[in-house]
Amino acid sequence: MTMFGVTTPCVTLVREALEREGFDCLVFHATGTGGRAMEELVAAGVISGVLDITTTEVADEVVGGTLPAGPARFDAILERRVPYVMSLGAMDMVNFCAKDTVPLQFKDRKLHVHNAQVTLMRTTPDELAKVRALDGRQNQPLDPRPW
Image 1 (spheres, helix red, strand yellow):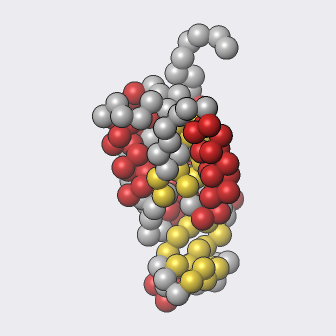
Image 2: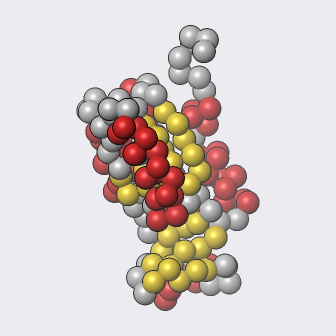
């Protein structure tokens, strides 16, 4: 499961419910390296299913934030064909470091100073359209069996 501050309550409830049912859950903080680490474990066959609750790393990849997922963010999940649920948690923001590090082209955008080290920028509809276009493979059925 992927998690970020704003998705922590959801991820915590889901993790607790799955653990009660006997599942071992790994939670990855969606900071670029967290998503890549999860993908590496999927590729290695260690993870057999993914609840991708927090996909903010993809917005950072597309828009130019400081916590990008990398261009291969969904590749291992799609190649291994593991059960996968994607959500759009924290996709409404792009991450930067301190406010004075936000690139000049974004100076007039809606910014939220989370703390002295973290500034969040609201994504625009155009940016979200680019995120959606990043990789349309997520919408293709991977299992031909009817449910």
